[in-house]
Image (cartoon, rainbow, N blue to C red):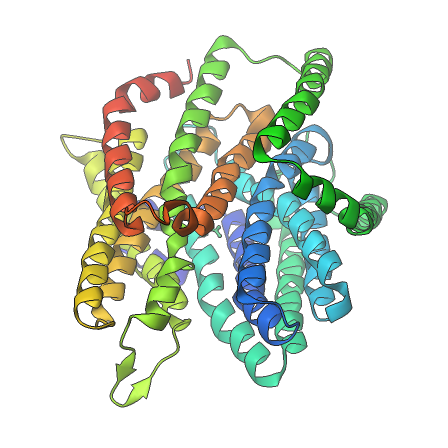
Amino acid sequence: MTLLAQNADPALSARQPPGLKVLFLTEMWERFSFYGMRALLVLYLVHSLGYTSADALSLYGTYTMLVYITPLVGGWIADRFLGMRLAAFVGGVVMMLGHFAMAVPALLQIALGLLVIGNGLLKPNTTSMVGELYDGPADPRRDGGYTIFYMGINLGAIFSGLVCGAVGETFGWHFGFATAGAGMAVGLCTFVGGQRLLARAGLRAGQRALGRHDLPVVAAFVSGSVALDLAVVAGWPWLGGLLAALSWARLLACAAALALPLLLLWRRALARSHVPLTPAERRRVQAICVLAAFLVFFWTGVEQAGGSMSLFADRQTDRRVAGFEFPASWFQSVDALFIVALAPFLSMLWTRINNSRWPLSDVAKLGLSMMVMGLGFVVMHIAQHHAGRQGGSVGPQWLFGAYFFLAAGEVMLSPVGLSLLSRAAPARSAALLMGVWMLAVALANKLAGSLEGLLAGSGIAPYFLLMNISIGLGLLLLALSPLLTRMLRRA
Ligand code: PHE
């Protein structure tokens, strides 16, 4: 952070609230554990548990989707019952147990379940708490704060693959997963130890800071999570069989039939116990949902980095440098490395634009970022073309170029988006809306994984499609930005 303080960008070097350090470090360790485990998962399933690659990838896709669906529930639980701070802490404990359980092969399903539940409780709440460190929606330090927070996320991601990956592949899978668990434990200690610096962020009115008095809640959530997991695992043969027997259309019909009465009940419960949204708040929530829909396609692009692009690195990229062939998985760290390296410069770019004669609205910034991300697929499309022509492989500069644009787009968009969300969301449902924002990442993970399959036989090249979608939707978002900006206005 001292490194950042020396940076010339006033938005980043402006004195940030001290609590940001705590959230930065907590999220850095949490992402270290999350991405460290993710880097090992497919390899472990195939090499140690004897899964076929198709089965392993399918489980990976389901897992990465589920971890971003549960934030919807985790956010709601925080808004309504626990407050963000306690919910994030409980989530961290459950995640830590999940990582340690991964080290025991027989506990695989329980471990994945715990990680899905734990991430749902932690991720939306640490992210929303950043917004609570500032004095109201007009505080100019918020964008810079989220950029710094995003650098923490990616610092964790850079080291996760290198450390957990290396430990897992060299000393054995259990050690790799246990290292991830230890990382989460360090994150939890930082979170609890640094609470004084967080002031009231993440606490409900009248709620005390984390302490011994919270132990019963933590114990209840941990045992509840384990029980829920066991119930799902025990019922899986029946549930899995039922799902397999239903066609997509029937499945949707059943889901709608179930969802409708639940929705009605929920609305009624909300009306009774919740302060209803004012018309202005409702407009803001609607605008947030529209933006989240755009983000599904943004993240579908970005998620290619770990999917189709790592296969491109593996199969179609010449990775020899001075007689040494570096592993394809290293490109994963290149992506996060670009994000950390570019963050100060791009934040500076936004500050310059804000102070210029043509300031851009936040929504316009999101549109522009989406187009920058799309340039990565222009590069990939050309690279794929060359690789096809030259009997199979191209130099690594193509992937570096593509990762550069993907990382630039992500770091231009994601912190601005999170900051916008934390400013525009009504305080009493801030964490729930963070869950909605993360739902876009969930859908994108599923879509990213199934894109090749969906396009098979259509003659459409995936990179060509992604290039058109991201640049096209970026332009549409630019065109819609005056309308959406008006909807997001607070008054
Ligand atoms: N790389 C981001 C992270 O792990 C992806 C993400 C962004 C996830 C926004 C959720 C919401 O945090």
